[in-house]
Image (cartoon, rainbow, N blue to C red; front, side, top):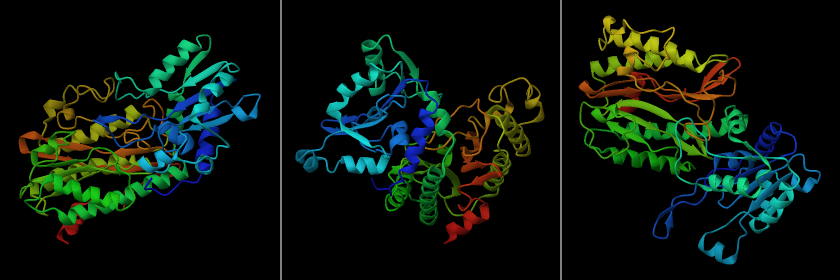
Length: 435
């Protein structure tokens, strides 16, 4: 791993918080991700199952965590199974965790090699009444492909049909939504690296450069600062491409007079940053670009101020929609008669509103171990949650798309902008580019 190690107390605390939510006499099992084939004999860069990482800090394939807090035998209460290394593996693949290193990382005392898993599984399953299984559950996506956790869940149901199966995902979503001080520190480091990359880009961009050259500058800055890489595929969208919400081709030349939308974030220690800025290719906003940018900035600042303890997802987005409607009226993009059917009392925020023609997405999402991190949209905002704040206005007929995004930590005393040091105002961006 490129990143500096966490203190094992993070993972010890995470396991304690998780096991406190289990039913009596329950065993919970977490599998690492598979190495995914790419082509021929090559595989994609390994990315750890985020729940396993959250509970152990182990960042290696072929790993299994077993938690059985009510076991009458203490040796079965926490067990971690790892791939046994060998001289051949060391030569061809490199270093793998030793038992001592795994204990130092995770705080788990009982470390076993993977070949012992089947025997241990039978011993704990014959004593336990419930078994908690972990699947990749997320509101934004339904997986149709098979993956390790699906196969393992089917196996447990087939081989132990009289056990009562429970879902780990709701418990993990509940826990992961609230970030500890260790996690916030890792996210701040991801933000700091992202900040450096943004400043590098601002000093690099000029008419004639290509989007992929800009992406290369970002990647360079990420890797030289210990980031694993990009937290998600970056969007480097010049001109009209900024109106394509998930534009990732990044293959066009950047022209004088265009506005460029940059949406990127570093991944550090598996934690994500998520930044969006818009900059003028020639270093100066045109009057119209500035007008639209400042309208989005106004919505951004007001929306950020509403990310507070006790707020609800739908109410927050409803209020942001009302603010955006006011800005779109000022920009003459919509008229009052367009809004006559807007029902702000009875219709969900994301349906049948005039402003949705120019803002098609939500203003915030959870952020953490995933860029679209797990967490319930039906849960009131709480201290320790981290959300993005990213309103935008997209005008295809003018070839202008503007989105402004920062990462916001909710606290008991208000909120903290983790990206508060990254230039945001028009003058600050123009000043940075002038360097």
